[in-house]
Structures are given as C-alpha cells and as structure tokens.
Length: 452
Image 1 (cartoon, helix red, strand yellow):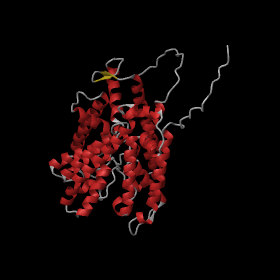
Image 2 (tube, one colour; image 1 turned 90 degrees about the horizontal axis):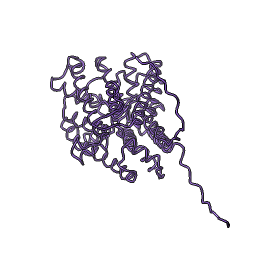
Image 3 (tube, rainbow, N blue to C red; image 1 turned 45 degrees about the vertical axis):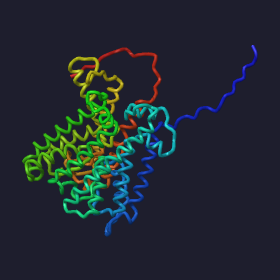
Image 4 (cartoon, rainbow, N blue to C red; image 1 turned 135 degrees about the vertical axis):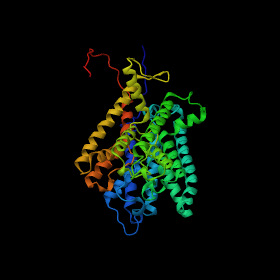
C-alpha cells in the first residue's frame, strides 16, 4: 500500500478564556485604576479640599460607568484638571460601552475572534462580520459629531444666561459629552435646576441624551432609509418603545407634580410641561430640572420603572434595554391571545431571542432586589429612596432622591459595586448565552406545572 507521510503544523492557538469578557474587564479595570490615581493627585482637587481613596474610587467608578452618582460636589470639589479627568473617564466609558468588545480588543491590538464578531452581530447589530472595524469607526465618528454639535449649540445658550464666554464654552463641551454619554455629571451646581426656565438648553440636553440612549445603528439606518416602514424590526421596536416610554413618562410626571409647590408647581404652566418632558427624557442620564428628592412617591416609583427599562442595546444607556422590554411585552400579548409564536410588525421573533430577553430581565430583577436589600441594611433612609438609589446605580442612570453623599462608607461601596455590575453584566451575559454549545442527542419527557 505504500507509506503516507503527513506533516502536522503547529496547533491553532486557542482563544483567550472568555473570548472578550476578560478583555473587557481587564481594559475597564486598567482605565479605572489610572483614573482613580489621577483623581488622587493634589492637582485634581480644588484649593482647600482633599480627596480620600474612597472618594476617588467612587467618582472614577461613577464616571467610567457613566452613572453620575457623586459623593462630593463636582463643581466645587474638583479642580479644572480633576474635571477633565472625569470627562475623559466619561468619554472612555460611554464610547467603550457602545463599541463593546471591539474597542477593547482593538485598543489592545488583539485580533477579533469569531465569538466576538458573533456577539457584535447579535447584540449590537453590526451589519456584517466583514464590516466590524468600519462599524466601530462609524460609532466613534457618530459620537464625536453629536458631541461637537451639542457643544456648539449649548455655548451661546449658556452665554445668553450671563456666563463668561470661556466658562460657557467649557460648560458646553462638558455637558454635551456628559449628556450624549448619558453620564449625568454636571459642573453647574444644582444640576439643571438653575436653567429650569430655559427651554432651549433643556431641549438640546434632552436631544443629546436621547441620541446617546438610542445609539448609532438605529439613527444611521433611519437617516439612510428615511422611512420608518422600511426599518429592521429591531430599530422599529427601539423607536416605538422609546417614544411610548418618553411620552408616557412626560405626561405622568407633569400631571403628578403639577401642583407640587416644591417641584413643578412653582413654575409657569408651559414650563411645567417642558420640565416634565425633560425629567422623562433624562430617565437614562439622571439629569433633573426639579429636585428629585422633593417629588411625590408616585413619581419616584415611575422613575424606578423608567430607569429599569433603560435605553437601546449598543447605546450609552444602561438598564434592561428597550428592545428586550418590547420583546417581553410582545411575549405577554402573544401568550394572553393564545398564540404559540411571538410576532411584531408582521415578523416572527426567534424563540432563543425571547429566552435571552427573559433571562436578562430576571437577572436584572435579581440584581435590583439583592443590591436594594444590601443598601437598605447599611443605611437608615426610607426604603423607596434606597430603591431609587439601587436601581439608579444598577441601571447606570444617576438619579438620587436621598443624596448619595449621605450614605456611609459601606453603603457607598455597595453603590459602587452595583454600578460596575449593572454596567457590564448585560454584555457578559450575552457573551455567555451566545457561546457555542454542544447539541444534546436526547430529550426529557414532557410534564407541566400549575400556574395561577
């Protein structure tokens, strides 16, 4: 038969453990440590103030996770250098989350593996695997363009309020980046309550927050096709659900707080509607034009619901994501109507996607309950305020009805961990759920469980 000689080359290098998850965690950890170290420098602190390790850590976590919760006043505690460090952390955190695994691996000079590309297509909706890098560049240009336009629009608006030209320019740049990345950090003092009567400023900030919470791909596709009818199902659900939540929240907040003398009741009727819309639009960013701690309990409960839903997948916003929320709503409607298939806009939604959305929702509910209980055990605040704080941290929103600075050291640690867990858990869960699996060759016998 003869002899056959086969030459075996070197085995294929195995992908790193986690195929993206560890790179994301490592990259974020490095940025966090560097940012915290910079905030500890004396040059980062304003004259007469000092920064402890816990304050630097909490601020760096809040900025990198684009949450906006603070334990010191950003305006007075930090110097210009410190504010620039915070702004850089916001930009890296917001843009990095939008790019997901791509930006981390690209920054480290690593080559994208198949699983990472698969993640981008499933979670972020990248057009094709071949276009991954151009997709990432498009996101970066999209972000910078919106931030630049927002800064140009805000600059004269701040100047018209009597602020010096230089300060107005700095405020415009800072708040444009903070708003688009849904970070919620301000350097005005008192959030946007100072400009509660300036509809133009509130409108620009709202537009930036909404653009950041919707993300690159839906807006780019809408601009290219110029028709809602011809959009993919994912984009239709994002726009429709976002509009429904925004309108419902604006009407509810305005109605509930209309006669509250400590919130909307102290401003003219037209401005009440504007401020109510601003509060609803900032559900993913944490900005407010009225004191949240003085709102009615009904408003706080509604805010918890809006924060839980969050923004769109692949955007700068956190939360469950409007796409997953809309799928769960479609599942509920289909189940009540006795239909075996879940549909929306004449399209059938694959069963694995429904299961993944359900898993994400249950995971987020578990996180909310767990961290709320932990936070309640470390503070004496009313539970509703604790719940707002916990949900705000997990969904990286930034609303606070109890003043984050009033929580003790243990409470701040719980909040900081909640911000990190809430920021990266959805992405890591999707990485895990979309990993290759072996098909089983058997099926268990079917049985049922009573409901109701």
